[in-house]
Length: 597
Image (tube, rainbow, N blue to C red):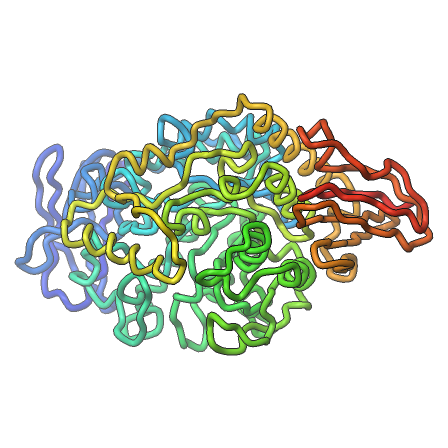
């Protein structure tokens, strides 16, 4: 929409013979559009106000929403709406953050607060800042069916979910976050589109039969007519990073972005994002969710990689959870015992070419040329909680001391840590899978798909109904932080985050500054060193006390013990100071940090 109230409408439909724009609100007006030689239809309309609703009529077919809609006020089947993109920003001094500065907090807009919207997040920004969080990662907000969804069933990538607060609500959140010194990372889905409200194939060749995804037809990134599709998603990414001032994108399952082009889509996207970063003078990040154990995605383009900046590491979570719970069902069959966690601490990937029982093949490659800050790890996230049958959190399966141990393993890791909302105070409510579809056949298919997904885990109980209001309400954070354990856990997270930020050895992320050892079956010992600062990290994963013998010449000075009474623990048996040959006793499920002097 232009200042003179003219508005240019464009839509890609290369095989259509006619395209008509119908402005249906506040009054109905019809415009015949003109086609260019690339299959785009264009028209300029006069006297268009923000709030004007419209649809396209391809040929003589039924009217359809705009694939590039910026707003769907009546849901995924209703008309699109013209929006006012102007916003009064006050974050001009914000420059963004480097990867090594990130302490990420993943959240779902709908279940984070009682208001279920962006405003509810704004109300908790001061709390997150005081905790030490430097970035929030928001699960997808592209318009989805109904008002309850994880967001991965979105069908209008350019439209901000109306029930969350729409365009202005998201911009207000980003602006407020920057005022608190918090970066915003947005989860985006470029590997598939949701099934309900998906009218894209009626416009043109958005999908390809060359590949398959677990969630629906593969997006056409390398088949005939793919240029328009690639351009659409690149423009979407740049919109978030530029117009919305978003600091980074977490790209869902990039391994399912199938592309055999000479220049992979993610490489083309990273090139455009780097250009935007240079033009704006503000840090912009691309983070890949990746199930390939391949550093190619985060290798610079000039070295033959795709130029993304960081990636999620599920294997750190799998190794930690399997060790703490003893779970070896499903994909946890590739884990168990201390060795996988030690390898993840050292190498980021657990599988670097060895045989995987679950995958039935050799898997992965050594990423040793990449610094630790290019890898994002977590003890919990939306997938690893919500894709359990009951959506049960890690803390509901392990004792309190083990919760503190998990926090220490995460926050003292050399990788970039990510928390999942509520983790820091031990939220007991689950995070379950929920939807609000209107198609009965789709609802049945989703339920059956969930049942099949859980078959290899041998879990017991009834699958929560994704369509039920109760499932959504049960997943909304309680914010019950009144118990002694909740208070102690929150303060422990706060302490460890601050410790991570202020110690030189903790800030350093190069691989030659970390040494990992396993002195015994249940004891992990890690040394982190940088510029004269040396720290010894000890983690006991046993339900019994274990002993560590300090064989070095340095004296030790204790800086942290998760078993201490201050953290609502049983009390520390480890000395505050120790010398060579000292015997250090670790309480069950505890973590200790010593400075080497």
